[in-house]
Length: 143
Image (cartoon, rainbow, N blue to C red; front, side, top):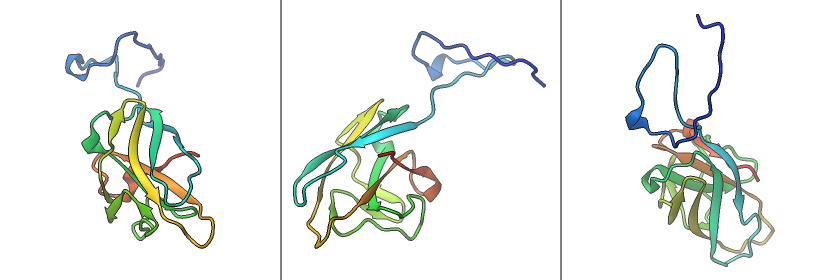
């Protein structure tokens, strides 16, 4: 086994096509790290742009999805559904649509609206980068 491990930070962007396998080195990119979302508060019945931010996000809109669920529920729970008040995303199980209107390496954005409720509601934002067909692929966005 390897006794000594070092991390070398490269100055160039990681290019998977130019990577070669060696016995002594492992190379790769930063994994997904979600840092937050905005806005954190919205007025009922007002259209807004939900932006999820992070590091290592996919720039491929086909592999980026969001869902909003009730606060206290789990992003990975198969039985959790998007509340009727949330307009702009729909899910069948863990497969949600639409893709983001904007997909960048550090953010993704969706046009959303939350309809009025008799009481103030708290929600959780969930994000998935990938196939998004199982609960394990969904993460709660900090915020």
